[in-house]
Each structure stands twice: as C-alpha cells, then as structure tokens.
Amino acid sequence: MTYWKPSKKQIYESNIYKMMQLTGQKSPHDFWHWSVAHKEHFWEKTMASLGIVFSQKHETLLDVSEGVEQAKWLVGAQFNIVDSCFQNKPSDTAIVFQKEEGSLEKKSFGELEILVNKAANGLLEWGLKKRDVIAIAMPMTLEAVVIYLAGIKAGMVVATIADSFSVSEIETRLKITKPALVFTQDISLRKGKIHALYKKIIKATETPIALVSSKTEPLQKRVQDCYWKSFLSKKPDFESVKMSAEEAMTILFSSGTTGQPKAIPWNHVTPIKSASDAYYHHDIQKKDVLCWPTNLGWMMGPWLIFSAFINKASIALYYGAPFQKEFGAFVEQAEVTMLGVVPSLVKQWKVSKEMEGFHWGKIKCFSSTGEVSNSEEMHYLMQLANNKPIVEYCGGTEIGGGYIASTLVEENIPSQFSSQTMGGAFVLLDADGNLSSQGEVFLIPPILGLSTTLLNKNHYNTYYKGVPNLEGQVLRRHGDAMEKLENGYYKGRGRIDDAMNLGGIKVSALQIETVICRLNVVKECAAISVEPLGGGPSKLVIFFVAQKEMEKNEVLIAMQKQIKRELNPLFKVADLVKIDTLPRTASHKLKREELRNQYKIKRQA
Image 1 (tube, rainbow, N blue to C red):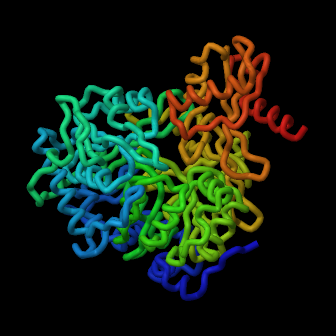
Image 2 (cartoon, rainbow, N blue to C red):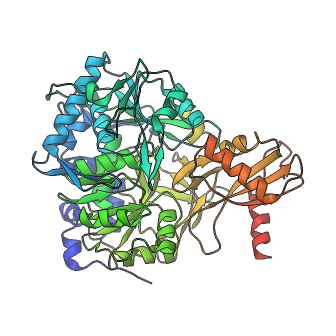
Image 3 (cartoon, one colour):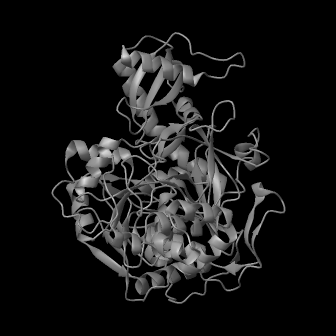
C-alpha cells in the first residue's frame, strides 16, 4: 500500500529530477544505474551542484591502481571541507537552538564563522598544530558545532565521543585517539535532571580540558584545564588550512563484533558523501531546516552538520530530551523542514502522545535510521505532520552515509527503502554466497565515502578477508540483513553479525557480555538482539548461566545497573533467560542463531 505519493510539482522541483534532466535519465532507477555506471561523471556533477570549494582541483577523481579496497578519490586536490560549509550570505540563519527550559535563539552564518575562527585561533594559541588530535565529549550544542568545525578548519583531527558513555568507555576512546586537548562542558541537563559531565570526563583522562560552562558560576576546574570563554581567541579571522583529500579530519567510533570499538577516520572527502545523500535522497535545498536529535559521537552528528551546511541549509538543535512536549514545540517554532529520528524514539512518542497537537506543517519529510523500523509506528509518525513521507536511511560510520534509502520522487511506503543510494551499489548474498532476494548486504567498491583504514584494527581483515568475489568483482562485508520485496523496494532485517543496534546506537554483543560477566551472580552469558513480534527496533535479550541462585528480577536489576555504569544507560535489557549451558560449536564459538531460535519458540509458546 502506498501512503504518500509525490505531486508533479514536488518531483519537478526536486534535486534528483533536476539532475535526471541534466543527465538524460527517465526515472530515479535509471539515474541510480547511471550514477553507478558513470561514477566519475556522477561525482563531478554532484560536487559542482553542491558547490564544493577547492583551492586546487584534483588531477584524478578516482584511482584504483592499488585495488578497489584502497580506492583514492580526488587525487591531487587541496581543499578544506569547512570552506564548503560557509557559502550562504552572512545574514542567513545557520543554527536555531534552544536550551532546555530556555527560549529560541539563532546564529547567522556570519556569526557562526566568526566563532569558528576564534576557536581555530584559540587552538593555535594553545600550541596545537596541523594534524594534532583534539576530542569532543559533550552534547550537540552550538559550542560543539563551533569546536568541531574549528578543529577541521585548522587542519586538525577531531575525535568525537558520545558523552552518554561510561567513564571506562570514554577512557578507551581517548586512549585510542590520544588527543592533546579535550572539550566538554560542566553539566548536561535532560528532562530536568543534571548530569555532571565534567566530573565524569576528568575520571577518564589527565589530558587538559577546555570547559564550556552552562552555569552563571563556573565550575571549579583542574589546574591544567581552561574555561571556554578564555580559550576563545579575540582574533575573528582565520584562513582554513588546506589538506589533501586523504588526510583525516575526524575519528568516529563504531562497534563491530569485538569488544573494542572500531576507530574510523573520516577524511575531507567523506562529508561529500553525507551531503550527496542529503541532496538526492532527502532533497535538502537552501533555506531548509534540519533537525536530528543526535550527538557528534555518532555519525549522524557530523552528517547533520555537513548535510545542512554544504547544501546551504540550517540546523535546529534542541539541548534537552526529545521525549517531551517542549521538543515538539521547538520543532514547530524552529520551522523544521526535515526531522530525523530513530525508530525507538517514535515508539515512545506513540505511547506517550507527547508530540501530538503541534503544527509541524513546515516538515517536508522525516528520516529514520539506526534501527529496523515498524510500519505501524512509521505511519503514526507520518500523520504527526499531516501525512509527510519518511526517508528510510541505512548505512554506517565507515560509509560516511547510507548504502540504501528512499527518495522523495517515488511512492513512499513506511519501513521500506525505495532505492540504493546514488553513486553506490550492493548485492544480497545467502548463506552459501549466492545472489538472493534476502540475505547479507555486501557493498560493491569503490564508493565515495567508504573507509580505507582503521586506527586500531586491520581494515582488510575487517571488511574484505574471506568475502567471496562475485564474478570476479570484489565485495565488501557490511553485516546488515536486507530483503528485496516483490514491489522492488527493500526491507531491513537487522544484523547478520554479533553487532546490534540499541536505540540507534551500534554496540557489539561481546562488549555487553564482558560487562555483565563481571557480576558475581553470572557464570557466563550471551547477548542477542531480537526483533519484536510486530517488527521494529531490536530488543536486547540476555541468556545467562547462574553462578549462584537469585531471583530473576534481582539479576535483571543488577545487569541493568552494570550496563548503565560501565557502558551506556541507553542500553536496556528487555528480557532475561536462565539457561544451564550456552550452545557452542566445536571451536567454542557461541551459537547465537540457536539462541534466537530458542527465544522465538519461547515467545510463541
């Protein structure tokens, strides 16, 4: 069933249609085929449409002389991607923001650029230089955006860390990236509750901290730290440091199938992928306002910045929790045109009804990512804005965007993807390595935005080792499960590997198991993600072998406290299953699929 269909006017005014006219393509599907078959031509036209600013143009757009696994883009180019973020008039609105219990505030592009320049000069005055690493561990605020852009503009590498993580998880990420300076803030306020962020960060590192104060009275700081206001330089001008395309500018973290998170560098090319997905699939145009409750520690934080600013649009940032009526009012008052969500957030809205009654008429589309969505809940979301389409969007940190999405020039069906993303391609393979309509996603490199290195793991082993070729074509492992439906659309089916998405955050089963097994009541355990019977976001279920007898509810409470303290309070245990022994292979590998089947039978009983 079709829930939304674009009008001719909407199609003709879309970015995709305009590019179809330029390239002579008759349908979105034809255009996708053309974008894959003519990659270099596609990306030249895309970068021209986006207005990517170069100080020196590339000599070669794509070089695969070392193999598609090590594809190099924009060889010979010199540029800084931040220059492409400031092409609006200085008076145009760049960021609309609101603190919890505060009122709407705005910063123009001119005001934002001065702040970015002052922060970039502040980095140099601190003694930092090109290619040094700084870290940001704070909520998505105006200051966070300023620091992020300033670090990149100064030719440095910005490691982004979600502030919701535990002290030990933050410490792990800081040890991997070794920043010379960390940025955080004194407290964060969510749902009226104060979280002492600075106190948490100083437990994780001795590295100097630049502290953003949200109070009238500054928090007492350590001797090696400084306050944000004194860190900012008085110099309002700064010439961006030009870099080669391959130079790292950001380090993001994504969990795989092992206990330690993968440290994934983004270079100055990666944001072009983010902006391209926004341009084609979300139809972001000048004067649009993008809102996505997220954090710089997740890829959607940097994605939001580059997708908005490179496309000459604005960002809307709400500092509080996106569960309350205040958030709904902010979306209305900020005149948001694209609102991003994770499915578990929509589920909460549907239950609480907190987002009902607002005038979200400015919204052109929603976007949903991070988890498998439920069609009933997505249909509910559409109606909050009087039946507006949802761009289902799925990808990864190591892609810089998505490999599959929807478009706004095709019929929109909740919880279904209508198109592989422009400029990229994938295939579905079954367990025997054969092409299938349902199976594991394997990307077909080269794709602009794909990572070619990891800081703390072997990149080839992670993505290519043991992957079958398809008729001589190199494939890249991704780990998602997907199904192609009879209508030609796609449906997400979760993860194939031991990673899981909980609340839109990717985490490995091993990370959860390691934390839980520190409890003296647990002998061993297995974490699995389970799709609810009606579909939708995955639920975390723990199978455990008891070390000593305790009530199930007591064990559940102990596990949840342990996960909150050592991993992330956003990870919720949905159910516990006590078991005598965990099923394993002869090589002692855990049989997670067998546990999923056991749980499925248990639910149906």
